[in-house]
Length: 463
Image 1: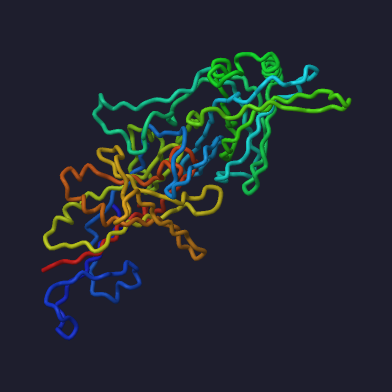
Image 2: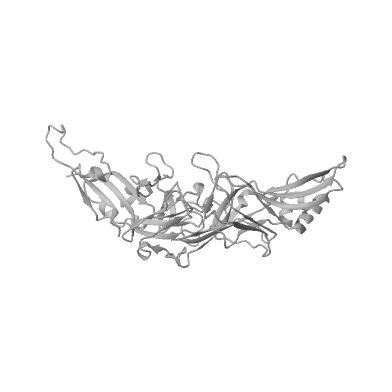
């Protein structure tokens, strides 16, 4: 039970005709600023409280991309690395993708010789570099031994709805695809937060010579993406266990088959055949979270962790699909009172995670509406429709912490419906803003071992 949920009652007063020329009660706009409450004739009621838990959502799509709310496309990203969060444990992302030989032709000079095989990674335009970037990071490349395939979620046997964030066949964050144990290359580098220096990894010479020979021989393997897929299933980029950061690279991945030859002028010349990223819908991140040794040990899709078991601490993690669940058990009874008209309802969630540093909070929160633990819709923007993106008010230097604000005026109208007791709110991100393909982790603030989550309601009580 949380003391920070606050209900503000605007009491209807019988004032003189000099102040009011009407005899009926009027809805009035009341500020939610605590500093102004003493200037109003209001009373407080702490009977409404929230229960808060940490929940692991199931079947988080981590392949492909989405569309941002402004209509622009979300860049495809190769996300690889590992973070070690002091509160929530570790999170590791392994990236998988196919290669595409389209455009490669046999115009290599007959006297050319193989030089090297290189994987080139360019930082994503999203500039996602998350975690401790002061240390060197190591990434290794492995050859896939299993074809990448999407999966369709079928809940026909369970009768449960498909989560709102699952819009079709996809690869999901807990799926694993086999790859060779022995790496075909590795690179050690220091992440650059504000620079776009490429990361180059030299791959196995034996594989490079094989590619080179097949291209020179016009081998069928390089004639089409499907033929190449039969020959070479793809690559997996794996983070070293000692890594401390996660980094997003652009989908402009290149595997360069470099060669050299002596030109007709007698001078040495160089050339390259380039394989690009294959089917982008099969660009996929596998997320592995490890909460052992934390307050969230045992967290899984079948076991949520109530805030009463964690000294009030709860969190949200985009890549793994961990959310904070919020319920208001007494809301239905409160709204069922006769003569109550709601003027304003605002959910305020205070954050322990700052907006800067190694692990900044995510900036575009949303609330999913879950029924029996399955998110089926979003809290919508009042009068606009579409998922409401909560306001993120950043903290300041005077000790004021950041917070998320949501307008719940439309949501609470459904609180009196049948089976509303089975509904709850999931604090998370939308798919197009980072759910399933970013490492953002946000920890909620606490006070007196309780999460700082409060619902501010302004209402009129009619006589």
